[in-house]
Amino acid sequence: MTDLSYLKSDFPILDSGVHFLDSAASSQKPIQVLEAMDRFTRTSYANVHRGAYKLSVASTEAYEAARNRVATFIGATDPDEVIFTRGATTSLNMVAFGWGLENLSAGDVILTTVMEHHGNLVPWQMVAKRTGATLDHVPLTEDWRLDMTALAEKLDDRVKMVAVTGMSNVLGTIPDVPAIAALAHQGGARVVVDAAQLVPHAGVDVRTLGADFVAFSSHKMLGPTGIGVLWGRMKALEEMEPFEGGGEMISDVTLHDATWAAIPHRFEAGTPPIIQAVGLHAAIDYLDSIGMDKIFVHDQELTSIALDRLSDVPGVSVHGPSGLDARGGVVSMTMEGTHAHDLATILDEGGVAVRSGHHCAKPLMRELGVAATARASFYVYNTEDDIDALVAGLRRAGELFGVG
Amino acid sequence: MALEELYREVILDHYRNPRNRGRLDDPDATAQGVNPLCGDEITVDIDLADDVVTAVAVDSEGCSISQSSASMMTEAIKGKTRDEIDQLVARFRRMMSLDGSEDSGLDPDRPGAVLGDLEALQGVRQYPVRIKCASLAWNTLLEALNG
Image (cartoon, rainbow over all chains, first blue to last red; front, side):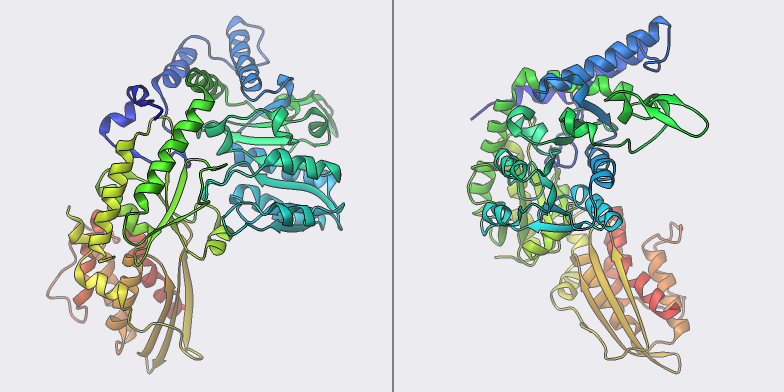
């Protein structure tokens, strides 16, 4: 078992004893991240890119250093391919509206999957309506994995964009994005990956991932809220129009027209999340000091223990792939005769924080045939102790509701 | 607070065996309610004769609190006049502290508003995020009546 329990003391919020099993929604923050933002704000803060004074230069350096750090973290060879956004959802909307409105028209197909988070589905629905393109969805296999045969069949030359999750926030399923990208590129389609769950838990090298756009959020990877990343292959970014105007994103402006700044600034209208960028930088340093491979193994070990223990709890069903292969640390469950919200309330009484509801994936809920699930998700600060508390809480729920 | 106070036997009974379940044929009034945060969905159908609720049916999907509240509501409003229902709703809202008062809402002198089984839902007040579950059916009922 990979022991990361020594990290727990870095997370002040865990001092309360809470069994925090909702990192797939948002992760907690270590003191290293809090202190980095505090130190920067006290000593080096000013707006970026526009001041001639020393503070602004220091702030700009810190902001751009964060961009470089993100680039090395995800294996991007060119830091200019890293765009700071408000979060993964904004990144995906930038691709949908900035790329989609420019490059899609009637007759084109946007191919996505039935397990997408609404963030990688609703923007494409909106853009499909505006452009006349149609939306198609790749189904899942009986083992809740992406049906690659169906994907290959649907990938004809009408498909211009493939929008796929890097890791399902409900099932934990990790689709084979390199294979999907290779197939999609044969037909000339672009590929966008909602990597909001993948980047924090598995690490990503965009060179091997093979996609054209990759979106993720800082707050799910120990960093602050309010900042996320859109990485794009430079050629793909060049096909994209700015989604927002104003601020640093221009080269020149007249009363009737404007020209754009170079990439990435073209896509960063307004004052960017500067303090958050410093926090994200510190979060990446923290994650790298542990090692992304180790984090993935740790999450999987906890998932394995959880799946094993949950199989003994009367009335509990787990929704997700049966094996651990290509599966992240997310465990969605239902209990016979007991609604997910009731489970969450009862678990909370035992200090266990889980998510309940549709997890912003309502089409997938319909596939699963449930209205809601309770979801436990693991991260670096979780231990087997948290699973003990989860199982105890589920047994208590079973007693209260007379299950089993 | 003990979970037993929230999940009282009467609540679990209404959850497992919801009363007046389903849809009415061609109802006089109907409304749909949804709690977008949790996905709970409900349809309330009502038949009225001379301002009196003669039939009510609820078609819903949700947690024990929303389901039992809806089930108990159907029993409480059947045969009641519009005025009596307004009083019931006011009383229910008071019990849930939804009208801003600290009062528990159990004023014995208040006429025409005996909550009966519904008083079992008092425990929900201790779980603020769940109050929305308990009130969904009632908000939908008002929407149907005011339609």
